Image (cartoon, rainbow, N blue to C red):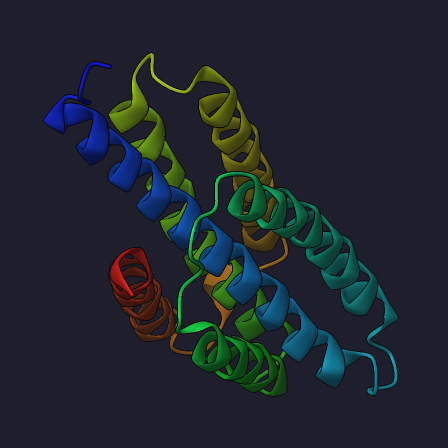
Length: 183
C-alpha cells in the first residue's frame, strides 16, 4: 500500500473547509431571510416584499440541503459556530427589516456580494479538481448574483446610510467566513 502524498491531505482539508464554510454561509443566509420575514409577514402592506424574501429563502434552503448532504457524505465537521450564526443571522435580518424595505434589500445586496465573491474564489482555487463540487458552487454563485441584482433593482442603494450599512454587513460576513472555515 502506497502512503498518501502530503498534498492529498492538504487538498482534503481545503475541501473540508470549503464545505464547512459554505454550509455555515447558507445556514446564515436562511436565518437572515427568516428574520426579515418575521418582520414583513406581520406588517400590513408588505406582502410583496415578504413573498420576494420567501422566494430567496427557499433558494438558500435548497443550497443548505445540498451542503447538509455534502457534510454527511464527506464526513465533514460542521462549524461549531452554528448557534451563534443562527442568532446573528436572524437578528441581522430582523433588524434590517425593521429599518425598512430598502435596508432589508441593502442587507441582501451586501451579503450576496460577499458570498458571490467567496464562491468565485473557491471555484478558482479548485481549478480542475472536484468538478462536481465546482459546478455546484458556480450554480449557487449565479443564484446569489440573482438575489443581489434583485435587491439592487428594489432600491438597496437608496437605504438610509447605505454605504455604512453595506460596509458593516460585508465586514461581518467576511469575518464569519474566516471563522467558519476554521472552527
